[in-house]
Amino acid sequence: MTGWSFLIVAAGRGKRFGGPPKQFEELGGLPLWAWSAGTAVKMKVAGVDQVILVAPPGMESFFEKEASTLQKEMEVKVVAGGESRKDSVLLGLRAARGKMAMIHDAARPFASTELCRRLIGKAGEVGSAIPVLPVTDALKVARDGVITASLPREDLLATQTPQAYPVEDIKNVLEEAPGKNHDEAEAWLASGRVPGWIRGDPLNFKITFPEDLEMARRMVRGAEDVKTGLGFDVHPLVPGVPLVLGGIRIPFTLGLSGHSDGDLLCHAVADAILGAAGLPDIGTLFPSSQERFRGIRSLDLLEEVAGLLHRRGYRVLSVDAVVNAQVPRLASMHGPILDSLSRVLFRGGEGSVSLKFKSGEGTGDVGKGEAMRCWAIAGIQRVGTGVGDEPGGGRI
Ligand code: MG
Image (cartoon, rainbow, N blue to C red; front, top):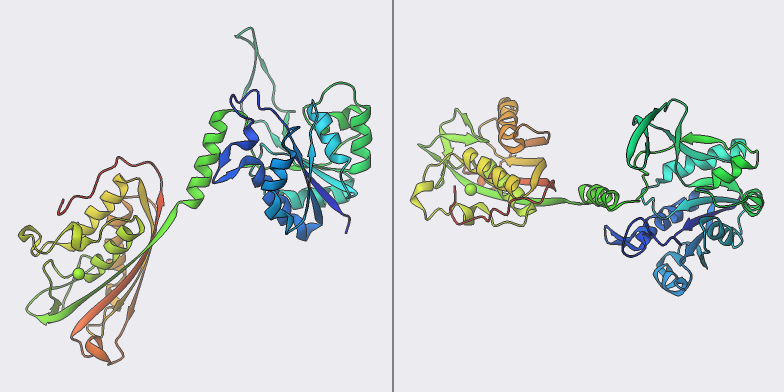
């Protein structure tokens, strides 16, 4: 396999961004450039065996310190960049050991390994490869703040990085290219060469303006901010009370006794989603010491809990529950209970509920038909900042 060097250009001064160079901006707990370095290291299996970080001049030792954990996985070389992008890329290429190089902007943190693999594949076929995307917005020409004309977009492609080239060839091209270039393909084309291309990835967008960084942060938050909670409940089965599970009345001679309607499935699910959000359990929110909760429909409590989560900026993604019951046979109630829970949990949005019924195998209080137990696990996701509605004791 041909050796690949993965060059990350992080030498820019970020003039358009305002403030510190954008490659140092934090994204999901990491500086922007470190996202690309992580991708480069993951490409080891596809032939990448060297990462070259092109740092702003004078910041090499800072980068070396930051990159020390990556050094355990792969050779990481830090070199000082130059005045222009072209100078920085050339300085990086001179440190390359590989015959081939991926040249990448640190300002594109979401270059995927899948994109990199396709680039390596294409470059293997035709010698070089760049990722491009069709331009989808209608284009206008503005001069001195006045829109003066439209431009046809049909023949236009937007170019991304990484771009894949043979090291010696791209070095020669850049050394001989007059003036500056926006990307390496510009100089490659100007030299009379034609780059191979693949379809780029819209998620591999470039962080140029503060709004781009905000978009990137929302993407990372959306992917990460999933929390899980666990709930459990047990109630005795007694004569003379209705049996209610998941808000559905089930014909049977015994029912679940409790301060509320005894619906232990709703209780366990409510505790699971409250636990995921780090909120107090339903026993604290709706205490049995309060007379107004006597006989209350637990599905209404669950709906209230789902509303509370929503106001705190979360949505329920999934719930999985096991009801442990010897009697009665519950299989026929599966569909109605799922529908009932889905209606209150997802508030018209998407989500999944899974429910299993397990017998007590004749053992213990459940096996003797004296009690039911329920376990539930819930996944929730942060979708907003919430309005900070604090859970008050017994608020309903
Ligand atoms: Mg309970």
